[in-house]
Length: 78
Image (cartoon, rainbow, N blue to C red; front, side, top):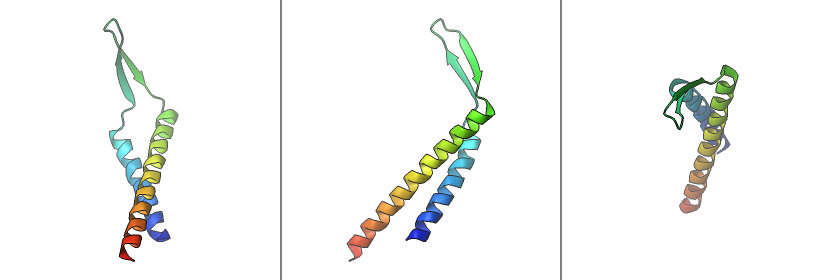
């Protein structure tokens, strides 16, 4: 069980990290009340730490879901 949870945590962290690097944008356009568009760029350290934060959150959620799945199947098989 521990081996499955560790693999789930590692693979979900790495997978979500790479997917967030691919799909998360550094640039944002915001429209003000007057209709003016403002273009902002997130600095690289902040961008990296936000990707890291979301990857850790997704890994923890994946581990909790797999743990719940394993425990429910263990109880139903007995």
